[in-house]
Length: 373
Ligand SMILES: *Cc1c(COP(=O)(O)O)cnc(C)c1O
Image (cartoon, rainbow, N blue to C red; front, side, top):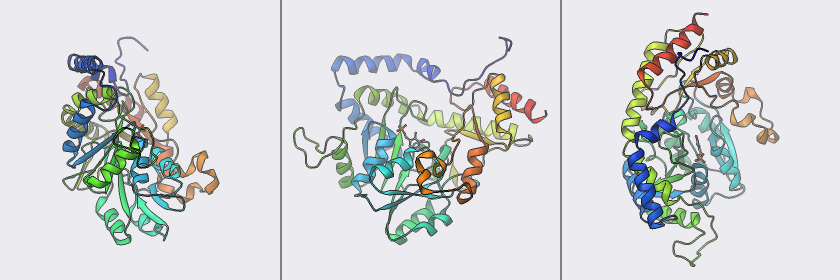
C-alpha cells in the first residue's frame, strides 16, 4: 500500500483526547491534587449531570456497564428460578448478568429491520417464571418500546433498558433510558460517551430503587461501616467521573456528527450492490454507535477493507444463544434465523465524530471498488 493513500481507523480515541486535551489534563490534575479517587465531588457531579442529560431524577454510577445490569437486577430481587427475556443478538453482558443472579436468560429473536428485540416473539416467551425484560438499543437504535412496555405491563414484568450503545437516542421523541424502571449505560472508552478506563451507570426515577442499587454497589452500605445488606464493590472512580463530566458536554455535538456521517453514508452507499446499508424504523432516532452493513460475502469484503487500510469490526460474530457458554441449552441456528443471519453477514465500518469528510469519502470509494468488482 502506498503511503500516500489515506488509511481510516475504526475509531480515533487519540484524536478525541487531543481535541479536549487542555480541559481533560486540567481535571485529571485536579482529581489527583485533591485525592478524590473514590466517590467525592467529581462522582457526585457526574451522577447529577448524567441524570439531567437522560431526563431521569437519579443516576447511580458503578464500575462498568455489565455491573450496571447486574446491580439493577439484583436490586429488583431477581433470584434463581426466575426467567429474564433478552435479545438473541447483543454483547454478552446482557445475558451473562442474568445468569450471574442465578436466573435464566431466555433468548428472543430480533427484528430483521432494526435488529432489536422482536416484540411479537417476546410476547410468546412470557411464562409464569418470567420476571423481566432487558431490551437492548443495539448499534444506537432504540428497541420498539411501546409494544415491549405493553407486554411488560400486561404481565407485571420490569423492564431494564440496556442503553450501552445508545446514549441520547430517542424513541417517538422520548429519550431512551426513561421507559423502563431502570436503564443501564456503559462508558467503556469506545462507547458514544467513553471514559479512559471502565465505567458504568444506572439511571432511574425511582429514588427507593436508586438507594438500593447504590447500597448494593457499595458493599451494602451508604455510610461507612453500616452494612444493611451484603453487596459488591462496583464504583466509578473520581478520575473517570471527572473525565466523563468534561466529555458529556460534547455528547450532543458528537451525536449530531455521527448522524451526519450516517446520512452521508446512506446517500453514498445505498445503491451499491453486494451489500446493504442499515435501516432505522419510523419514529426512532439512532445515535449510530455503529454503522453496520450486511453482505453474504463478508470474509471477502473484510479482506478488501483491510488491504485498503480501512478499519472494520464484526459486531457480533455469533448470536448469543449460539455461543459455546450456552451450548447446554441446545439451541440451533434455526431457532433464531434473523439473529444468526445477522451474525454471519454483519460488518461495521468506521463511524466516529471526529471523522473527516476525506476519511468518509475514502471509505465510500473503497466500498465502491468492491461493489463494482
Ligand atoms: C458495552 C456493552 C455492555 C457492557 O458494558 P461494559 O462497560 O463493557 O461492561 C453491555 N451491553 C451492551 C449492549 C454493550 O454494548
